[in-house]
Length: 335
Image 1 (spheres, rainbow, N blue to C red):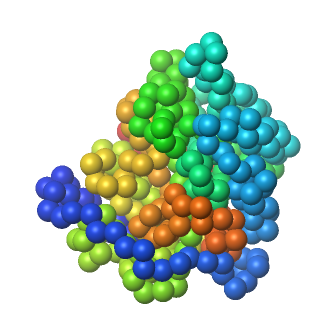
Image 2 (image 1 turned 135 degrees about the vertical axis):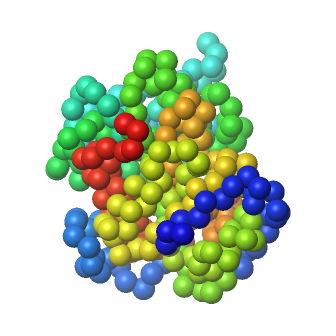
């Protein structure tokens, strides 16, 4: 069995039940900037990531569907940074009634205008009543810093960075999720998508043994019990996307990377925007710090900007950039 990857079949998934614990608190790393990576490639600025997360989770709080004006302000902040990085920015309005508010997805194109494309997305709304620093200002901060690097070094394949609205309840799992509407339009338009990466919570890490939990006890036999890695989650039949992303991330950053291929029925596997792409037949993975299996502040008022580890988060973003460059420069089996 390949290191860091487990094939979890439906039979195994039905053998155990969910066991969650709130056994630790993730927090900032002692250093303020990332050490030099052992792998080649650009380093990420931890302080820039911190500034984005603080802006989104503090200044622009609350970012839920009952505060559309704040979501609009967040959309403006994101669009401005994507444009400043050199992206070709578009706003996509989501309206559900003539009298109700409208919401916005923001996309930025890097690389060629036509042809196959790679999608990297992160939702910018937060669960009601929460600052949403890890969930998911961290993913948006990563998106904005990826834009800077792609602007400096345009990819040979079209890469669309997309900030999604309405991922959180009450829209989660409905056809009106921002990512669901985007994926459906791509399918309707016949767009060829090489793959989609959903950045879902990238900022929580812990050195404490036992800090990492799993949806099924059997996974604890194969994966670390300390929350010091970033995860890549895919589903069976993804044509090698999970392995390609995880392999490139390992080569591009000193942060440990673990990967999991599992059916959507396994708790936590489908809980982000990548599932919207699965529903439309696209290959997609989630890149994550594993959310509530590690972070006890998930969907609480304690999910604040000062609770995250920006050094390791910078390493995670560096790893994602390596994956984006690899996918944009090569091909996947079956393409």
